[in-house]
Each structure stands twice: as C-alpha cells, then as structure tokens.
Image (cartoon, rainbow, N blue to C red; front, side, top):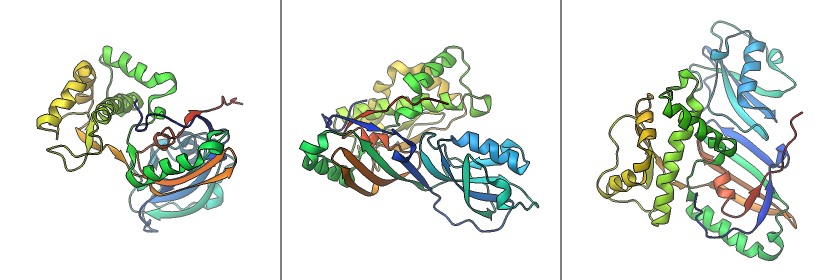
Length: 316
C-alpha cells in the first residue's frame, strides 16, 4: 500500500527480541469486583493469546469457550492484557492460575465477560535497531515524527492481518471461489477479517492517492472507509461512486462478505496516535511510545519512517 511520505530513512530492524515490541492493553473501564466472570490481568512473553487462553481453561477446569479476551496480541513481544473466565459460584486462588508461560498480575471479578474490541486501546513501547539514518538524518526523522504525532497517518490494516506472504488473502480467495467463506463459527473468521480489511485498504489507498484521505468528503462526518458487509452503505454521492469504482473488480469478495453474517460498517481513515514520544537510545537505536485505539496497527506508523526488517526467528 502507498505511504503517506514518499520516502523512508532507510532500513531498521524491529522485533529482534520480544522486549523490542511491548504492548499494554488499556481496558478503559474498572471491573466491578463482583459477578460471574473472573478477570485476570496477565503478562506474557513470546506466547500467543489463544495459547494462553487454552492454558487458563485447563488450569481453571472450565471449557475453552468460557475464556474470553478483547483482542489478539502479538506472540513475539512482551504484552499485558485482560482475560475473563466464566466461573459462576466458584472461587479460585490466584496461585492456581500461574504458569511458566505467563504471569497473572492481578485478579478480580466483573458482571460481564470480555468481548472482542471491548478495550479502549493499546499502549506501545517499540525499539528500532540498526537504524543507520539516525546519525545523519535525526533532525529530519524528528520532524517527521512530529508531523505524525500532530496529524496522524493512514489507518491501514497492518500486514499481520494478512498473514505470512499474504497467506490469509490467498486462503480467502480460495474459500470465496468455493463459496465457503462463512461466519466465524465455521472456522473462517481469520480469512473473513483479512478479506474485509483488504477491501478497506484499497479504498484508503485510493483516497491517499487523491489526497482526500484526511478530508471529509460530502456525505461523511469524518474521513472513513467501508468495512464491507450486508446492508446499505453509509456512503453517498461522489464518495459512493469512488468506493464502487475502487471495488469494481472485487465484487465476488463483496458478495461473499455480504452473505457471511457481517454488517456494513465504517472505519476511520486517519490513525491518530496519542501520547506519542520518542528518544534516541544509541547512535542507531530509536525508541517510540504511543497509544492507539483498539484494532489499529503500530507498524503503519513505523513504516512511514523506515523500511522495516524483521530477523528470522528460530522456533525451538
């Protein structure tokens, strides 16, 4: 997808170790301390969210479906997030839920379970290494980061959504051709989400090309793009025509999404980081901290300053 800025400042290594990519979930509300759902605040390192959820179910002696969370967090990272366990009328000691793969930081209760997208956002602390341009171009990098902090960047779905070598999109296309792209209960939710995100990115890329990505067009309160599904689009007039033109070659995908149980929605085109700060740790290391709303990707900020290179990680 096209960048906001025409050039980067060269290559930088990111996520060379889990500590270089730290994410803290911002729940956005205070649990009530009572109710049928046990809330656990957990720190994990180099573990994925689904794996931890499965372990929690085993430790608590409950069904896997009774463990919920707000969103998936990266595996190769150090992250904190909340999990809820449906345990009506049952008490459990915090010590029973500890495991070598994660640490339970705190435990409480709440009246409702966690649902996807329920959290307010995420706080990031990221380190770019081997960023040689810091020596000769730090003032320019500093100016670009200031511009990003002030005005934001295009709110693309990040490459993580599409899988290694766009594998989730390839699988989505295969399922669409066989009329098998159904709702999440059919085990195709990941590919459904990838297809929907790809169509959004196409519209955003066209708005960026036309320099209208940060300008509300007639008929919209703020710049936004379609998350395709069943129902009438909120776009009208020239905006509706633009989106229809962009997606003209993707009608089979639109049709599949309309019949997969998803409703037509909109997503903001501008990703505006909050509390953004940065500092140079060494001659070729840059640390960035910022907060993003749930469902937004930190890598779309990083890609505007550097060509991101991630070392191959050996899986033991």
